[in-house]
Image 1 (tube, helix red, strand yellow):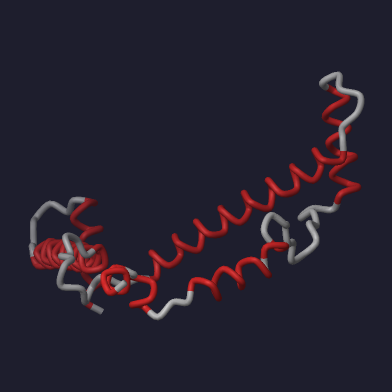
Image 2 (cartoon, rainbow, N blue to C red):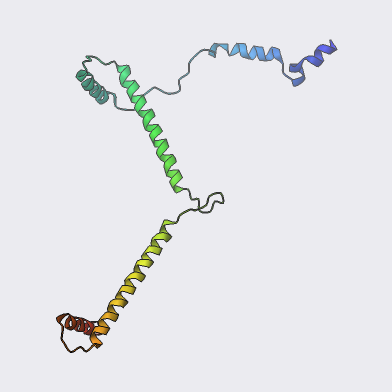
Length: 164
């Protein structure tokens, strides 16, 4: 008798087996029954969808389409749309996340600073070309050659305009 009490795990845990069996017996009428919390409604409008399915079926040589097909296609459309929306939501969350402050990520390229650098290079190059052109014009304006070349005259005129 003492050995049975030591080896009886249920009594050591404080579980009354007779009471548990009685509770399970009273709720046994619920076992095997299906409980549905809401009505199974199609996602898409049934009548226009059925008409469209019938049009496609007639082209393929099918005369009649059961209502279950309409319900099935409606549920499949709902499931597919739900999946697409979940994926788009996940993509937008990834786009919003910023990894600049994360120590585990290292920035390999910074496109904005590269663009700024190239714009600055272009400005400096343009400035250098403008300076060279100005020097050429000033040299042409200062030169006093005996023969009056039409190109030389044009350069002198342009130099005067630039100096103004």
